[in-house]
Image (cartoon, rainbow over the protein chains, first blue to last red):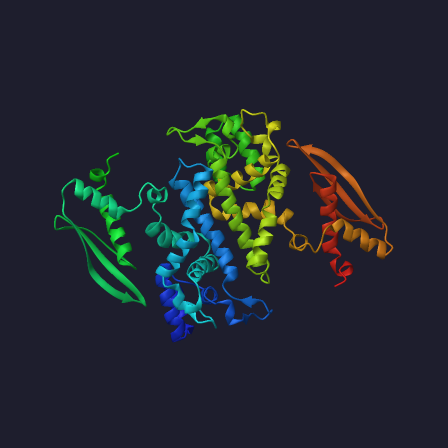
Length: 246
Length: 246
């Protein structure tokens, strides 16, 4: 990876350099062919074409990314839920790759910052976020292959968002589980924001959960609500034996 | 691969040996964990369960295989048809992975020979062929990973069946193209069966196409009609410049 970066650095413009660094941070590994990623953020309104007259925009990559995302999530669920039949697996996957969820993922990564378009970005609906999330996955497949798609999806979809218990509808909110438990056990709980900042044009909230004045868990997310939920989930897993009545 | 086979040979029963050899022939590479492939052919009527009470049958593998097949075909079409937009790619893929087509693929590989079931095999409808074709792809993914899925699909789906021109509806039948050309050019053509045999319980027809008494192409397939079509396609590509009026 260091070698790739070195070779790349030689010929890149300062603008390329910023794009490379930001994409690398999002991916968690170095991109090789930067142009593929540019295409992943080129809206059809740009009216770009290649030397054969084929239009250059992210729609084809979206098709590719959608297929890779479905395959990776299928592989993940297959291993994670050995008890689930075909119907269960299909239902779980469609929850994970739902339009709403993909839009949220794209929004959290602030992918819209890269979009090249003749239409002003604020004119787009919510779906643009999910669309470019898919096209980014397609770009990773083209650039680095299936295993890197898996890595990216693991890091950006599965770890932060996929919670089988919640998807199964068994857990609606970890925050409510924590509150319920505290009330039952007569403990004092307190959520507070310890950090509120913007990095790379993205606002981040840091939330701390204390029980009986002891800090139990911290988490950062793009909204206060999400950060509270994340911190509650961490606390829940830490205290699982105590809170789980099963 | 030789090493794998050696290790495996040590502990396998004669029955395992036959299964291993037949599966290896179909895959084009050695399987590693044979049990995964057995599961790929276990019908739910067998009522098998694992030590945790989860049922063992091919339906979960079918889900996995379907996802891998879609991803591999997406990757293939993306590279093969740089002119096609998202809609085109989606349409082409659904032609390739159509129920009818998958059933044909499973039937041609005679996968039904491996099925373990309490229901007599002739009671199943046509879909069983496609279902176990998908579960076999799922088994390959589990056993050897994505790249081997790609190899298998390339060998068993793309090379023998995927013909973009025909899928686009531009070519309905290569046999009719050949006949048309011969009539126009006042050439004599002749199709004859030079071979008709059964290997591994599967009937194979060898068909020869001669033009002006010279053998132009040969092909083998599971029906006379398919073998004629394959031979015609080979002849067509050999004579493309002459026959193509574009």
